[in-house]
Image 1 (spheres, rainbow, N blue to C red):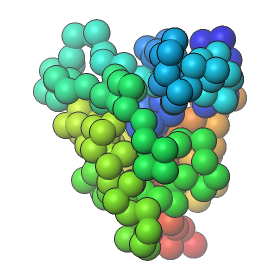
Image 2: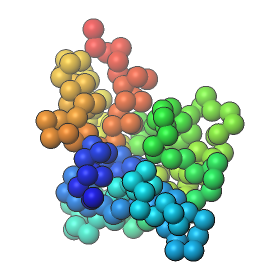
Image 3: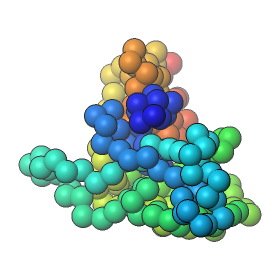
Image 4: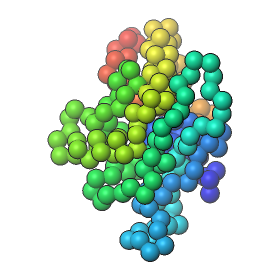
Length: 188
């Protein structure tokens, strides 16, 4: 089950898009499992199960931001509000978010009715935890540099397409957003 969830998600976290290829994730119940709660019948339903990253147990590299805050599924815990909690499985979920080149995630500026629920989801999942912001910023900076030296085909293959093992580049939604906003015109 764990392996299939990771494959289905391109080996990235359902919430932050961080890499989970090394098995560093837990099975997340989008609607909380509670033997006597309102979603009890969904406990083992495939559509309610996701792969969410977890706090790294590895020793941080020299100069790396040390992960001290819970994020994604561990920060979410049993939080779920019908009509508020944004599902990572909803169609075009990426259109609800915008990503700065500094690694932060915000609600899309085009949202009207869902802006508050998107912001609540960002806050409850702590998607702007310092470690996530630092990791996003690092990959966005590298992608920006590569946009000046790679062909469009090579850049898209490296950053936005699954590799031969089916792995997506971590933070691919942030990469896609910034490709559309900043980098697509660099390629002739």
